[in-house]
Image (cartoon, rainbow over all chains, first blue to last red):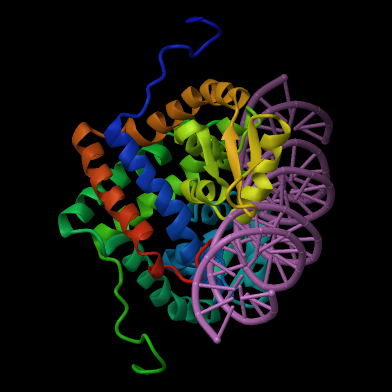
Length: 168
Length: 168
DNA sequence: TCCAAATGCTTGACATGTCAACTACTAGGA
DNA sequence: TCCTAGTAGTTGACATGTCAAGCATTTGGA
């Protein structure tokens, strides 16, 4: 009853502090994120699309190889393929073949896309400020950034901690 | 160009600290959460199902009215209706009519369901520890809990900050 | 009593996410 | 050259999420 197959040491239950943090995170994800999505949707954009825009807008020449884009925008390649289609159809993103590697393609944020991003970004940022940062003091924000980036870096730098990997 | 329709004061862009926090949050949501989901899926459970189990297991008599369950498990009523079906079919959750209000129904976590939760909880908790809390110091965890709960409370106590509301 | 509005939940259509093939190309060694 | 393995991206089937509409019941007031 105490030694069955493999990882059968006593479970590391969350302590009270951890539970508090965890519940807060769940509330944010399930209440604030859908709100962000609704605001974007009112302007014919999904959160996925916004992430694509944001990643491209910060890249040199507003251009990224598709695989880099998928990684930079935190999504799988297949999801990227599916969702970027409408952006290309609208002329907000342009896809071009990579001259050096005929397997690869580059995505570029067009002027039309950039204009669109500039129009929507203020609304999105206002949502984020209102639901995430407004209730926090300056000190809380600093502490939050410290903890979040520690976690984020850890996840990204140790992909071996993730099973099959999201990709492909 | 500076005064068009309504909320057209200068956008409150994220400062460097806020950006750090925000990027970390996005990384957690798009990399850690899918990982949690994969672990659960390997045991024929969705994150939604786990949330349902967790909420019911903490309720008196392991029982909640469906609307309370939806709220406690952070999901819309329609999503709850759709996803709880398989749990009922498996006998892990039981639905019963409410004697006082014939519109309402109560959901109860059965012994079968409780056993299932007890089997899976250690795996899920281990994932959360590994991807969220392991990289943090004790102080960072405390600060994270403080900030997260502040944000979470704010969202839950001020639903007027959310547009249409997720529900129904 | 009657009726309109609110509440509790369900349904179905459609949009999105996920996963496992699959094509095309590149790299590198026999 | 040939072969195998690896990489880049796409596709399609299916699972899940979302939204608006719907039914049944309750509430509360005329």
